[in-house]
Structures are given as structure tokens and as C-alpha cells.
Length: 81
Image (cartoon, rainbow, N blue to C red; front, top):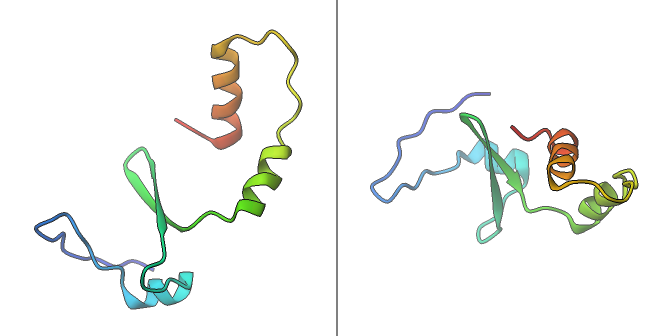
């Protein structure tokens, strides 16, 4: 599904009704914009239960990791650029 919309003067864009319906978005609901390289991903507000489940699924780390090693592990886990 692909939609094209014009960017408003204040940088606003209307989310098409079909997409709002598909995602179950309602007026006043918060959404999350996630960027990956040259893409923007629109998500519904994160579910805290899902976050905790994912957080606790991270394997236990050995002690004495460097900051660089920790960042690399997180990048791999969350597929960060």
C-alpha cells in the first residue's frame, strides 16, 4: 500500500484514513516515528508489556564489556545502523 501526501506549511501531513483504520489510530492517540536511513516508520504507541518481554529476552552479558562492545550488541539486537 502506498500513499502520497503533500507536506503542509508547518511540516504536518495527514495520515490517510485507510492507514489510521489499519493501525487502529484514534484522535489524540500518540504515535511513534522511527527513522532508519532514509525511511520513517510510523508505529502505534509502544506496549509496555511487549517492551519488557523484549528487554528480558536480551541474553545476560558477561562482565567487563567495553562501551563499544555494549553498543555493538545493542546495534545487532535492534538492527541499528
